[in-house]
Length: 416
Image (cartoon, rainbow, N blue to C red; front, side, top):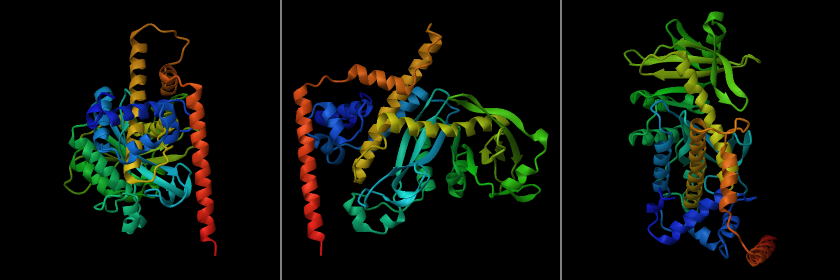
């Protein structure tokens, strides 16, 4: 918390931020302003709600501190910047950015919020360093709706790849060390993202569709056609990294691509084949200098770290449990959840270093973020007396009764 303390001009929001992060790290059945306020010992959630919506502090400044913290402990010149989006299912239409749209969380079109994240992944670990909430065109074309949710007046519509490009450019502009960028098909098909990376001479391994036209010296072919024409000796068995069950081995092959005339750098189509099912996946690759196939495979394998980051940040730090509606509140909750997860990632790296340099019980598996969070929450769990618990029970029931009465009255007034 000392890393971000300077972002809070007054002592009250500084203390509230610490209590809020401790609440996000606590073992609560549900994480929202009510449960976090009760965990902190407050008499009501009013203080936490004020902290998220009206208190004076800048979430983007805290985000910058998180980025610096992550780079300080996980920084590596060969690191990979991973972009991906995740959605939070929502009810109603008032929450900022919500509409019926596809979200990978549900695997279908649902009423949801979608945000794009930038994850920093190195050999030491991985954590999110930036986030952008996706505001659909239906919102940007409705100024009254945006104003009600607190969306800045100067915000214009931007696609998800455009949001990713902005976050990557911001990270590189401040000197974040990274050699590669990777993402799924939604980002691999965007020409502006790849053009910006090539201009900066940053390598990329971006997934593309099997129907993607690929320019070679022999002509233009679809990615799937090129894969089926590869000879047997073109395939190599390589690991895309370690998973929960050991190394993730696939068969890999690369095909030289033709770039625009006179353009610098080297381009390839990378093909991944599942050794059991034969399923194929395709990546469009670029590097300013020649690199071996193993380097491209290593960069492609880092893309899975974004899924691990989402899983840990949601399961351990409450990234998706917010019950906020406004632009400011969403960014503040999300930023503090990123801070909580970055802290757990740092502790996991510290535990791995200690395991490598000291004698430990070989029968014990390494400490994970999940186990560290459980131990941390147990050690710092505040002792609350029975009176505090009963006061909160009464407050919740009173608020729920008032809400129910208000809903019934509003419903009756709307009846013809």
